[in-house]
Length: 366
Image (cartoon, rainbow, N blue to C red; front, side, top):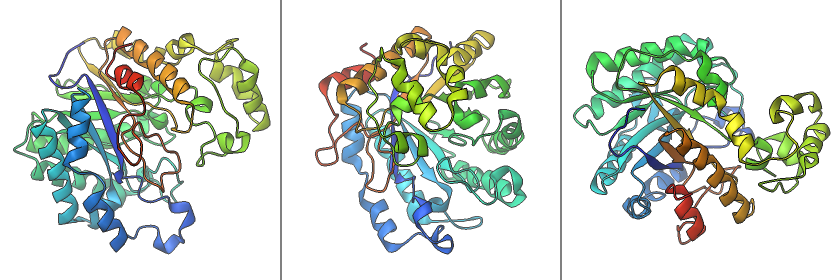
């Protein structure tokens, strides 16, 4: 697989300009508002010190998520203060010799946690604003070739074929301004590996393809607050696990037992073999397109899972990723108090990695 300098192993940042906010608890007419408290949060939550610390872990790139409602004040008008934060982030990354990735984490009509009344792909207005946002960012960062653009995080539960036309339109708009920008395009089905099978691939050396993996979901999201299954089952899930009944029972209790074998491949235990099976579509993509770059752009575990289990799962995933020579980025650095599923790899107060072993694992020392 082709290599890019300073793009082998990295850290994702959420909770600063994204996951903003958990909308289900807000009245419908308040869900798009940015308040003075939000603006204060943007000013202080992530600073140069955080980027310096990530660099000290010897990672080489940082993925920053941002939400459309944070950047876009009104249609086609953008908040100068947020553009300023993005510029600061880029300058900090470059100061510490890490490559910055700007990721549109939640676009209008494409929220991975809360269903939208109008979907991105059902609204010409939303799609037009989506393209315009990336044109604006190309104008802002036109002279900075280090910045990578990741068009959209976790395209909602549709096949990639429905996303392909908007991805192509956006890529064309960026290419009209900059033929050399690295652009990252993910796949449908929430960015999961099977979505790669229907993702369009371009004759463009500066397009990178990406997917996410959280398999098995019942482990990585155990006792999480945002999905009804793990919340209702409310049980600790170990990794690795010799007791497949523990997972089967989760499906049965939640009324989806018919999906169990499809998700667990008829296995009698869960270990690295399960990870290899789950990532087969990614391996297939690499075999089909050996001259392209496939990036595992997000994977992680909910932070209240036992640290040893988190380490075990991360070690297994990174082992399989390295077997296939893929660049990767771990999710994520820090979690806010209103992030219902907290995946942070550092503690809230000291902002230091949860364990020395985890620091070694995310660096690829598996």
